[in-house]
Length: 187
Image 1: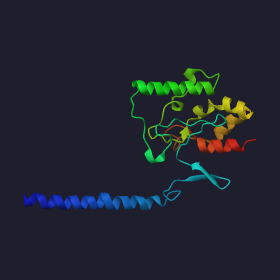
Image 2 (image 1 turned 60 degrees about the vertical axis):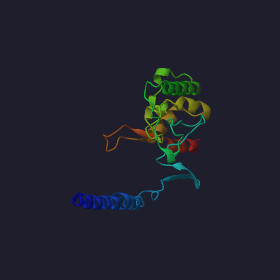
Image 3 (image 1 turned 90 degrees about the vertical axis):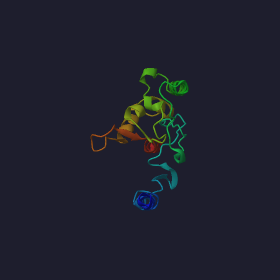
Image 4 (image 1 turned 30 degrees about the vertical axis):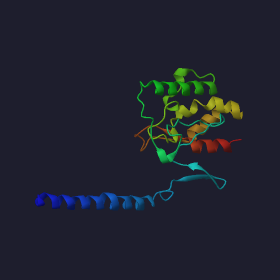
């Protein structure tokens, strides 16, 4: 028994040292090299912090591009999805309510045109990006409210669209915070 017990205790202590002490310390030190020093990359406008570059936030006014819904109400301390399956009645009701709300705020859009990402939460609940199509479907509403030309808003969306990673991995995306900041700067 001593033959197996002592090596097991040694291995447990080594793994505790590696995984509970050295690994977290190394990750904390590496995060200091990231933009924002591991505390998130803040976005400032006129000297005021207005959000984080990689964390989604809620835009409720119709004069802004609306974000993807969040299952955690954009709380970065509790990143999570809803964990409800696509056949769950509560989930289906939530999605239908989001579709109905979107259609009320975007008259002239048919239900079949509503991008899924505008009515379903991301896995983390904090996704700051939309596809260009999901941003452009909101252009008509914003142009009417702000009395701007739709073509200039479409150009703005194109300017804030990032292509796929390395030109081939993933979809093109639009960071909504950056887009809405640029929208406020338009005259």
